[in-house]
Amino acid sequence: MGLNPNEHMKTPPVIVSRKVDDLIPYARNSRTHSDAQVAQIAASVREFGWTNPVLVDGENGIIAGHGRVLAARKLGMEEVPCIELAGLSDTQRRAYIIADNKLAMNAGWDDELLALELGELHAADFDMALLGFDAGELSAAMGLDEELDGDAPKIDEGIDYKEKFAIIVECAGEAEQQATFERLDGMGFTCKVLVN
Image 1 (tube, helix red, strand yellow):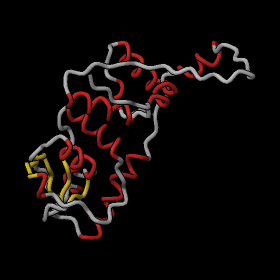
Image 2 (tube, helix red, strand yellow; image 1 turned 60 degrees about the horizontal axis):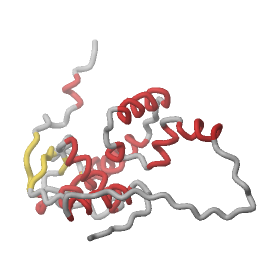
Image 3 (cartoon, rainbow, N blue to C red; image 1 turned 30 degrees about the horizontal axis):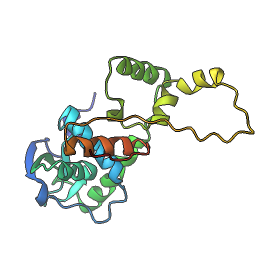
């Protein structure tokens, strides 16, 4: 006899809207979020919408979604979708805060399928910065590193090359400039802001 999948649900999930200012980060949350990563999450929310509710306890304490709440603040959002997990014990809540992050990190990649997907997204002119990979990771995942290694020109070791390459991106306004700067900076590029 098979298990009833509903037996494992502590409470049926109900998505509710909560004010961002009412949500309380867990003071002992061991997962960190850099400014660059929060900018990536914010860019993802702008592109795809809010796709993953914040998990909260019965008193608006954040269980999962600390980075999403930081991104919501960055975007000036007043409310975010949440699922309340009031049925967890204190021990379960504290354990799940860790498990939610670590279990996702335990996943791997099918490198061949990842390269295929990335290549097709790139060919469709999708903004690759929205995927969360830095430029080096994208290059490696798409197999570009191997292609370049075989075709790399021979460099005279005795010459100290100081060549720099730059791109100037014209933005419609200060907000777009800030978002573009944060996205590129988050990907590891050295950026300079120009105003004229």
